[in-house]
Amino acid sequence: MKKIMFVCHGNICRSPMAEFIFKDLLKKRRLSERFFVSSSATSTEEILNGVGNPVYPPAKKELLKHGISCDGKTAVQLKGSDYEKYDLFIGMDSMNIRNMKRILGEDGEKKIFRLMDLTDRPGDVSDPWFTRAFDVTYKDISEGCFCLLEKLIREEL
Image 1 (cartoon, rainbow, N blue to C red):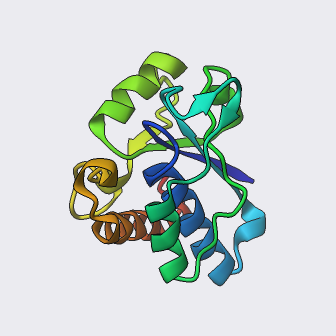
Image 2: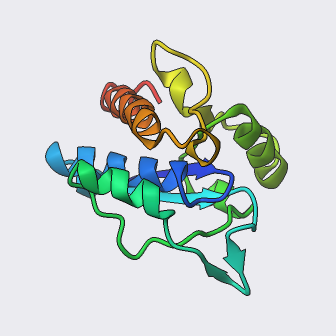
């Protein structure tokens, strides 16, 4: 079973969107049993007294527009011990990658990737917290998740 962790700053917008978009792709392709998929944050801003905030309402609303539920998801923080537990860590932007390496340590096994670098349009997934363009973020993440799955099926990752 391949274990994948999507990561963003707070784990309330982009990384949970990626987690549930990817899970939806797996379900539609009948591949869910071959993967364990989760998401986490590089910060603790959305985690208070050990309790994570739920997915940000506009992100949840955008997922629901596409028939994808993220009910029950709450923010969790990435931990150094996760490096041994997961096969891939997929960050949403360059800052996430830098912070992931700070938390996880050096990436000797080459497990850390930026999502859009797996597409024909390398770069950062824009942060809808600032842009408010949750539809654009959804489109980018969907493209990235599709490309990720295709690479995994071809065993390129």
